[in-house]
Image 1 (tube, rainbow, N blue to C red):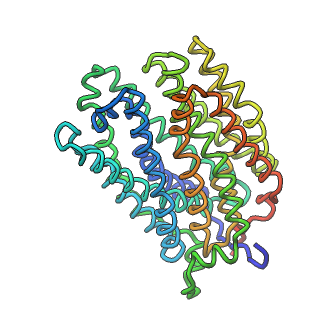
Image 2: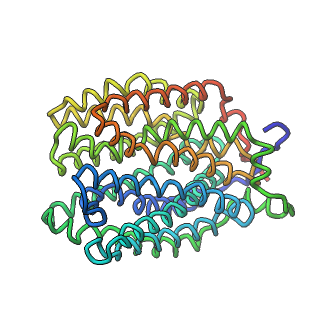
Image 3: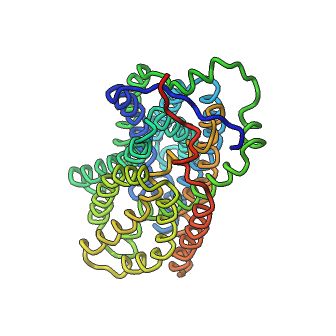
Length: 437
């Protein structure tokens, strides 16, 4: 980061700042709703696409497709990150939304294996890859847009809204699941009800695309766009900022793995290992996510007061120490209130990372490579660690070594803690700065 000059961003009124941030957040919410619907409903549609073998084998195959979607995220992050840094954050957000709409609509209409045979899982994989391209591009553009629109003194608070919308998307997916579980029988959900949320997601994507078309571009990008620069953004990132790229990769690996452990995988863990009914497991996950959502702005505000590094180190260090006892206690729990408290405790610790995620990653890069720098290492880390969390957990379970997954998560979190302790506090060294102009 040496030699880079901070951005000088014009002061915005609170109203304009809030409108821009909420506009960007709306797209983020719908994108992540579409992304998490797959994980929420895979219990019901796994056998539609993978009818052979025992239930655990069907779910392993569905989890494998979930992981495959993550493989497309680095490609989406690379293409859309470089595009956003050259042509603007707003247009990148709009393109990502259109791509997600196409992926969700495809899943909603794919016939099952009994109708088109092996083409069914092939189409599912293709649709999931399309969604992966979209979400890979969305994350970096959204984090950059919201961080650049946020003010210097409250950047942690405003930027924490990115994860508020990510969690809101997951809560919305779970909410639709819970609603359909009450309205439809399990056989109806497995037959056709699982298609409803994918269709809903594609409709919402069209509506949000219209909202995004009216967003204003960030001042940081507008000023950068006035300076012609035909150099490759990818080469600039890799040659000028390899250390920062590695830092974001390590932080994202630890944060992504623990997030998917305590959110998407937790629903199946509660059902299969702790032996809660599927409906009760979904209720516990939904309530824990609501509480998790509510603490994001609080910890974002705290990061503005005490610094980003302290919260990151707390999240990863405490997470490394508590993953084994919390997962073991949840597995032995037979009371919903106790299981809820344990999941909430784990997510509260993790919130030290999630509330700081967008702002730390954005503050570490200059404007010309900011979106790519945020998106690419994040997507690579999540492809390797976040996207495979459920698959690895299921594999450990099938081998009768479930506690091995707890150790795996703890080790990755410990590495994240070491990296967090070694970095400078971006609250003091941010390359985004607001000054009067």
